[in-house]
Image 1 (cartoon, rainbow, N blue to C red):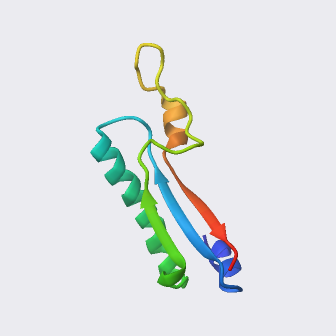
Image 2: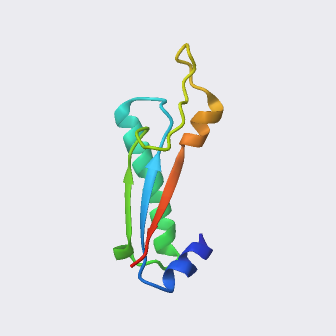
Amino acid sequence: MTKLVALLGQGSSTVDLVGTTSSAGTEQGRLSLSRDRAEAVETVLRELGLPQARISSKGVGDTWPSRRPDRGPDGELLPGPAAQNRSVVVRISCG
């Protein structure tokens, strides 16, 4: 992340952090966990010197466009795809 902060520190770009989850758990739990993920990355970026005003974060749970189906035909959670759905997407906007 230090390379990201160094790159962003050279301009006025902004960062949008989108926390995501697998489909495990309740909807409220997934939203909360995804927010926590995005906020954890936001905290690290701030600690590394990126100004708060240039960072936004949100959690979207398991509803986002690039999501991989993580349930099998019987409804069981598929570990590989579920792990790939647990992430923080970093979107950089040039300013």
